[in-house]
Image 1: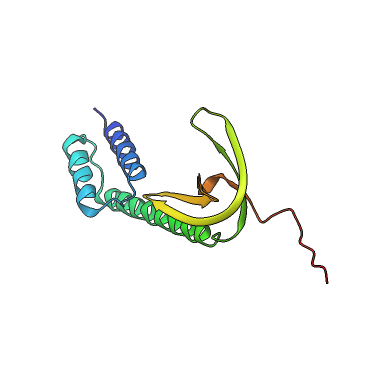
Image 2: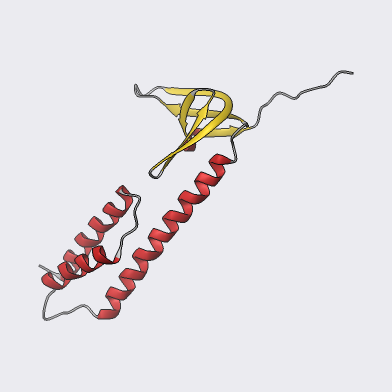
Length: 140
């Protein structure tokens, strides 16, 4: 078995696990991956220690960027409370549902952010417009 095949398989599984869960890859998980790579590496073509440090840095950076993205999304969603929005979402039958209303609340569940639009729970990514088309005129 070649080193690149093991590294590729290990990298894919670590990326999948970090994407599936919202927790970052911690040091213990990195050591587990490192031990697996060392176990299966080709003795005639060993991987340098700097490559492992580079992989740890890349994993840490990816985890930090994911956390920043989630924080920005949540902050944006919370700023919509009380505002008029329009959304377009796909329901369980596969039909596209559109609607509009006032954002009443925001719910964060893991890495998913949902907004309550007049009693309907909508994924934050389904919001297509903020604000209303109608203009209000005041009469004196």
